Length: 474
Ligand code: 6PG
Image (cartoon, rainbow, N blue to C red; front, side, top):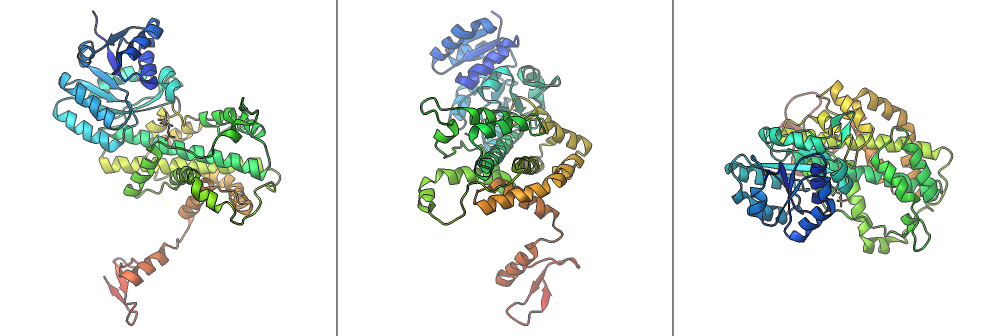
């Protein structure tokens, strides 16, 4: 019997749909699951879609793969990934590849890659975005690992990835953990984008007094313009949905406590280590965290503040659209800054423009906007920030009055808008001639002799604050 071109172990919905996607593209696929009933169910239900080779044992699974073996593991990130690697690695030979398609932490991926490299096995930490539908119909795929492994694996992954203008949403991101790092930042940006959209909804709801169905229409209109994206599209769907049990808007019957599985938090933790200000992503993570603190919210409910209802004035929806676009530019600029900082730190040589290219389709943050980012990097691959790209600078300039008005209105009405506010603060911080960081330096020198640099001379200095306040060279 012919061997399979690729194998998938872990047949929960993502693994199952990925296996079907390979099969539908004419690639024979070996399938395996710890509980064999899932393997059987997959073949029974979808066997007609292509060539599946079901295997009950790890040994049979590995034996059914053509060499070099391409083995995709789709299990819950963390200890289960290590367990599966420990189970399969002894059955593999040098040159074979293990592809981890879960949301692993890139540091774990680096560790696993190094350990398997010693044994001649390629470990390919791969970000896959797009949820279950994406896995089946074309996700955005972010593989790390060796260039050699991409030669054997890339064509298959590019086949099953989403396509935009004929270009697959898949490329070799860089060595070892680069793929999972980029997927992590993708998710951080996803958090920021979702938070900004949520704030726009809240402002329209309470500032303009619109109902969820009316706001759904506003989002539908926005989705025909520069904000066109999957997240805006599904936001309109969610807002228009009516709860069958109560007849109320769905948005009003869902508990307002947002959960998270960790990738957004990792993006912020790593940004702190790298010294990259990803304030938009951080506020999005904290906003979820605040929402979940029911006890704090209950305790603080009666604190004084303005009424949150009405008073936003004419043309507010247009102003919110501008504030959303401007804040989104900032959030993405911060995420791309983190990718570039991570790439420099770990020597990955990640092509930022290529990341924007493969995020145009398939993934959760897919958007027309990403083609603008691709173009910005094409125009200036070394740009320190996307904010200064001609298109984005013009859009920010055009939006800024409205942006300030929206942030001021939010503050005046007592509507929390941490994403919009922090994005504007970042914009103004970068624009500022002088920041009060000079005063911070003075304070540090005063209480701890931490020294400071001067604008007019090289070197480090300290003022004798406790003495005659002369300045000495440090
Ligand atoms: C994707 C998503 C996905 C992620 C979910 C849930 O790119 O397909 O990012 O990988 O797991 O969005 O994330 P949270 O539970 O942390 O919101």
